[in-house]
Length: 249
Image (cartoon, rainbow, N blue to C red; front, top):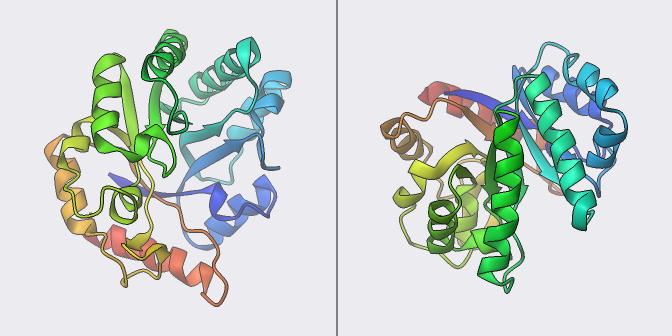
């Protein structure tokens, strides 16, 4: 295992600006956020400029690219066209895991299974793994739903964000059952009253989490994902969590 951080820790900066800040904070690996509703690195841009996107991902200021965190807003066939472009980009730059959001709560289960199967089929042909992102307000907020989806869609995994299961509806439930599905992680500190709190003031047991992941032979990134909060030293929090995770590895 190793420590990385998401470019979406700095959503107001350019892609290059986010890389520079992470480098300044002594991160050596990066998870690239590719959100259509952000300005850094849009899926539509990847589809239209694949060769340029490959060059950009190969020139990340000595930061190793470890995963893509994606959010496509296009619908219908356009959605799958952009997803295929992201998979081709991932293959070209040797990224293994591509994170996607699950459907919103209330989406028919069979509809989501069909959609996910199509995405996994596309990704598999490119040698890429698809992971659902743990998120409140989406199907992945429920641990039982995650296990059923992963069991029903062969090859589907999870980008585990423990905060969702500490702050959300699953408060107090053990997350052990999710470990075998985990392809990637996104981390901050959290308690039942706040989705993001200062590092050390929350309930995320990082040592226990690492031990749980080691039991299933997880050897990928522990990706820091801390948003800027008014009155809190953002850079200090990013540095603190990096140092904490590195000390546990």
